[in-house]
Length: 431
Length: 166
Image (cartoon, rainbow over all chains, first blue to last red; front, side, top):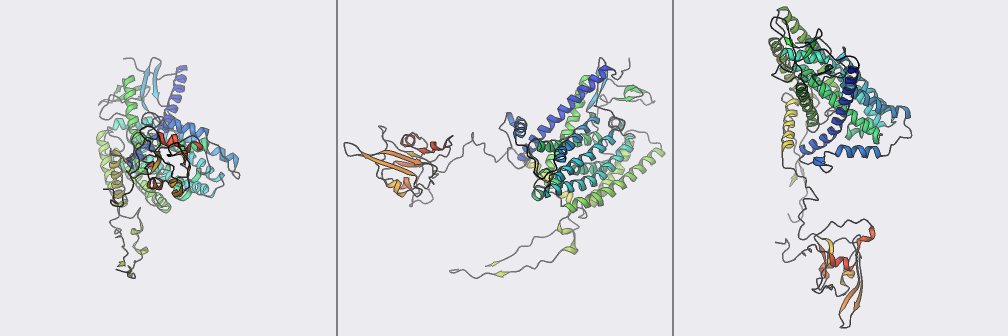
């Protein structure tokens, strides 16, 4: 069989252009419909029906919202710093959208001109690019809060900076275990290693999964971590003074962040576009050949990409991403907001030490397994799963014992005894 | 009777759990998420059942030959606390009194229903109807023809002998 070659030359340029347009459109449509999903799901959770008037099941509601936002008056506070006020929404919007470029969305697609990787840019630095751009997003938020010259917006910006910097640490450290196990920082390689391991990283690295999900919630400013836009305390935080499409840009970036974070969670921990219990879809580049794995004697098994496998794997990726998006909404309408000191203490006193300790444990386990010559495969994954299960159980036990997030109950020293007073009331006439 | 203060039992620190509480909360919201019984009423399609004593838009009863039952006695503009009824009475050849002008300003009306209560010939009524939106304000002054055209059911007056309408 003739070995498949990656697409090259002019066709590669055209393919990249098509992928950029396609994925950008896809993400923007997804973001638009996330606003509808948010409202519909929140309505269902509260036993309401939500917007269902515009189009069938309210499906045209995002278009109506968009038209409304474009037609609304653009306001500029008199005391705002004009340049930064205009710049901030752009600085928030761009990082949330460009991150998607390094996330593989499906199995490679064979065409007559060569095999097309279903990823915009398979950067060698992969995950580092994601981390770099996600930390850029905080600049837009802080600038938006500061340039509005509004104390609530400013407080929102301050909170955003502190929170995002804190949780970026835990986020980065939880990814490190993934990179150690995958042995590479590109996301295509992370997906390929999960296919080879036979078990998704959510199990062998369960604690990293939990830490990553929690940090991702904090990074995207979603409840229970929506300190920067806490409505009851700060109006709407950093975008209080914004209206019209500038406000819309903040909303799009928030949902864009959610989509990217969900896709990242799916890629890093749920196998990306991998279809479970089926090796037919596995495909990755190994020394210039598209292979689906290695035979027992170490020889390569060539992959057989087809267009329907690409479609199916894209479906799998969409289902996984959609699951996390639903969880985002679900959590938002279930859990109340943390107090600010709780957010900080969770980030620095729990997440950071746990992530550091977990890196040591996983590194030690990998070293041990490599020393005893355990083959990279299902057994290797199970060994890691066992170690992680112990760690996760310990973490949950620790978290679950009133030491981390507690109400007033947790600090007996601070509790005051409440004397119950019985006040006798004057008897009413005629009683 | 004494007012007593009930102090909620605080859980002991060893038994407090964020994770368990969060998960049970999410289980509860999920139960509501998939619950098909929604409380929202789909208003234009599903109409509310109005109470038989709902007092809404007015209506003038008519005789079989199409004349209004009103005899222009002047009781309703007198009793009206909002002063929203304008009545100019006339008399025909047989000495029957009839309204030449009968206008109700629905904006001024407070829908107390006293006009219906006071009417000796059961001509003017408040009705079980509330969808009376218009595009201009002057359309809210209902003249005699408009009042006679209304077709909604009229309000059941409160009966002192049967205070709960049973």
